[in-house]
Amino acid sequence: MKRSVRVLFVLCLSVSIFVFSGCNIAPNDKTVILGSALWPNYTFEEAIAEAETIVYGKAVSKSGIMEHEISLNPERSDKEYYCEVYLEPIELLKGEENEDGTVTVLDFEVETDTHVYHTEGVEPVILGQEYIFFMNEHGSFLTPQMMIPVESGTVETNFLPEIGNADNSEVKRNAKQSGKLSVEKYLSAIEEAM
Image (cartoon, rainbow, N blue to C red; front, side, top):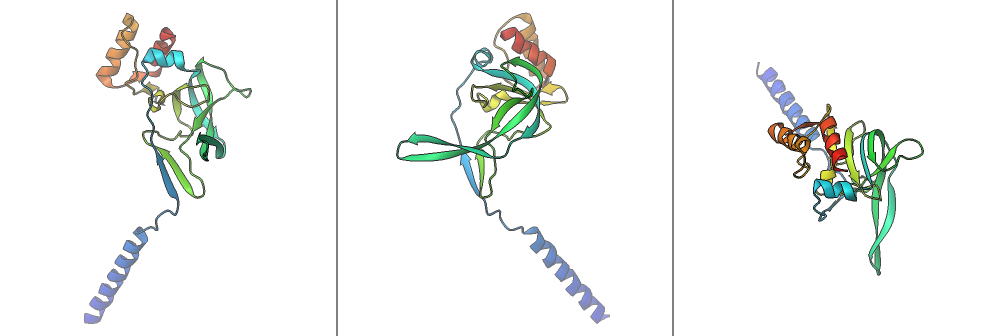
């Protein structure tokens, strides 16, 4: 009896050590580069006027990691890493499609073999997800607030029209009450403000 208790104790101890050591996963050897930015403040109407492209689309594919040099200091240049995400437009409100019928947006939330690049307040673009983007001439969103995910035909955003006509007032009232707004009503509000 003592022997079976001892064997059971050793077996439980071994399993516990194995489980706890297995849960202690070795840290990622990648360096995390965390950036932050000061974003301009736009009203809904200003963003529509400023945006080169406004698109409601689905992220369907991504390029490999790309880079370009940026020089803010003449003595030193830095590399900026990004990938191109190709959106299949559901509705293109402003701007032009690529030759293949997609719209390109830049995603700066990337991971290389050695580094993870993350900008505070910015989420990576997820393939298969629908979004509304307000983009500049380079293909990047104007601010993180202007990368609006669409879930089940609804948007959840506080980026709404300023005082306007009765339709826009209804849009704001509906969004404030539920926190959500149908994508159709949101797109209509954009078109009305154009």
